[in-house]
Image 1 (tube, rainbow, N blue to C red):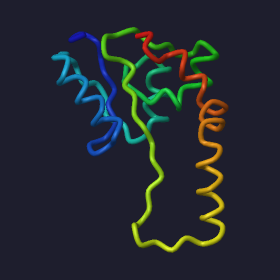
Image 2 (cartoon, helix red, strand yellow; image 1 turned 90 degrees about the vertical axis):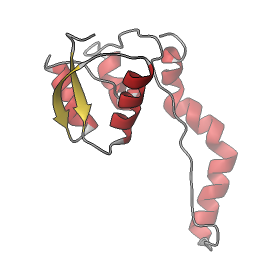
Image 3 (spheres, rainbow, N blue to C red; image 1 turned 60 degrees about the vertical axis):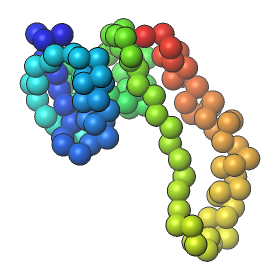
Image 4 (cartoon, helix red, strand yellow; image 1 turned 180 degrees about the vertical axis):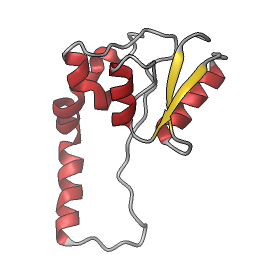
Length: 126
């Protein structure tokens, strides 16, 4: 992996933090080639053949399906995270916000499967 040029996100990016934690925890030695400020820029650099990266799969759906990029199997990858809706504890929600929260609570599983079910193809396979 030392000879593999890696493309990083900028300092402070959650993607970069996850990537650096993976590199640290697996003792991977890498060669940093580029630092870019968006996942889209990283994706385009990878597609242009400038290097490799660790990126959120969510932003690669079309490119994965079209065969423009591929996931390289490596121990510990892909990394998984959970997203949460959060708000101030004392927040008084508007009727629209209350309806949205009720909808999300009732439909979260259906929405997750419909919008993100394709990600299951990558869960636990690498």
